[in-house]
Image (tube, rainbow, N blue to C red):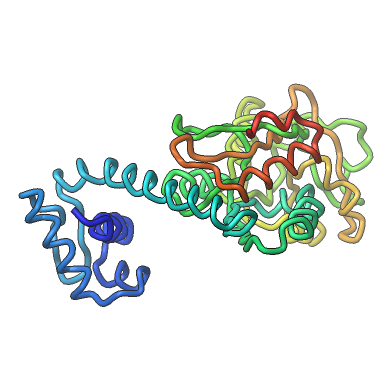
Length: 300
């Protein structure tokens, strides 16, 4: 069994298409088809239901998928470890970061990382926490920064900061002058909310429901500055982390604390338990620990 056959099989399963898998792997579609056919013959099973539009895993294919991913991860781990020995302080690192996290905390960390390790190719992917968790599980990200909680038991976590969420309103809003806002006062408000792939969205909605109402969501976004701008445009109120308060003045909005119990914005580094942490990943995580005063031995 060739490792390339497993790689093609996993990519076809992810893309649900021979054509898309071929494009992703930069090979021809006939080559993909041939390798899958060879793998099916070796295993004596049919791995995909084939049609003109897609390729769907059979029951046998589903049974093969997870072991195949594990084998590929082990092979990639070996390649990375050897690369680190041969090319010390060189390599690639792909990190998933939600938009707000990068703005609030990571610009200085990224600057220091690039300054210390100029030969490491750092790639940042800006998406929501739920997508980052999925990408860590699938192996397309080396490490990620997410808002807790997570659901996957195969993922390791390293919490590094906790922030309360505040209410964002226009300066002329009746709630703007209050020292603390009660959730019951928000029942008739419209909300500019994070998209569904942001983990912090669900606890905020649950907190509203605990106060007796479902929030009327009129707009969704992944960008904190767009959310603030929409609040300034009188589209509704919003929730943002307290640490963004000093960045909101240009939008003619203010940040107001919310009543207890607070909805915390718990941030953590995550990585797959079965994936080897490269030199680059370990050094990035050490920088995070240094920045937030954590025990760097946690990532040894």
